Length: 101
Image (cartoon, rainbow, N blue to C red; front, side, top):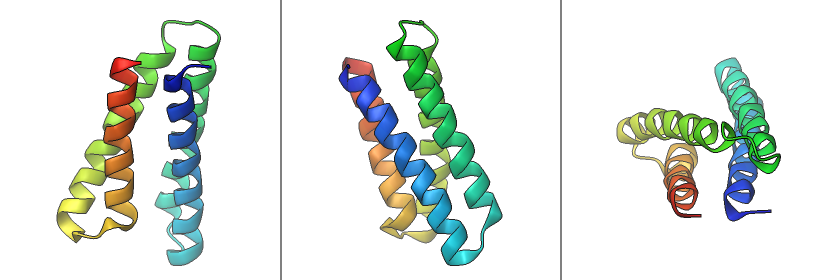
């Protein structure tokens, strides 16, 4: 299993858990829905990549890029590391890994 697949799965788990925690803490249905959708899409992209399909990596990069944009705006507004800064920084890290490995 490549590093790219590992980081996509890890970011997918982080998205899922973050969405669930956002719902449990603030009763935020948008957090739950976006966390579940983005997490499962990242798992699907990792599956495609692991099966050798060319669509897996670009799909993962696109999803992570969208999340980096969303969390970049949220971090700029709130200036709080949790959860926006965490998702922003790990997303950028994932994009770097996906670009080089």
